Image 1 (spheres, rainbow, N blue to C red):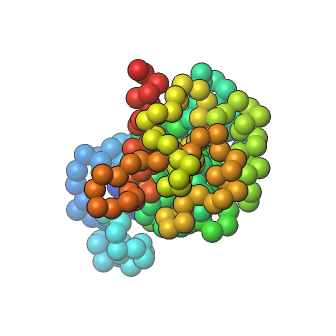
Image 2 (cartoon, rainbow, N blue to C red):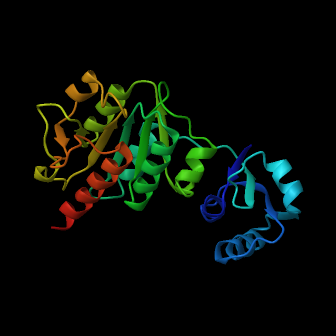
Length: 243
């Protein structure tokens, strides 16, 4: 079992159908999200316990709970084949691949953007990647509960599987061979690869991409935070598909 901290993450875990053993709320908590947590938990028969702030803080072992946490089942992870099979229901599915994202706050923010963009799955690496932990759950505002996430040991193998299933692979990089992200036609099944905060996507991963793209920077900095860049590109993909 795992602990999920924060009002929005707990509510989203309930709404996603995640298996929840119990919810703990500190006395005196008020607000729309708190009311929804109580209402949805009651519908599903999930036990909600209230305690004094002192007892709640002693049991939560986390200073950023917003007065709420839940005991829930561990996150379920999928195989790449599962993502491919489920994406066949859509004309132009969209999958995000993360090459060694190591900061938990970046990972959480990326997952939130991915959920907002309606992606069909996220693939991340087992090694050299941030774990999907309490910080990621909180930073994603509960988006983790709504995403199909696969962990792989070899990203290139995953790319090959996606290509065989009709996906075009697009890698974000600052390399000299990249082109403006707005010049690509995204009206097809797309797998978008975002790379490590410092090093970007690895050479072998880049070599297996169909397109290498960049976001041009007219300002004094040459790159965006990876979570911000992910959001920018994802919503360009969605916009391109409606134009």
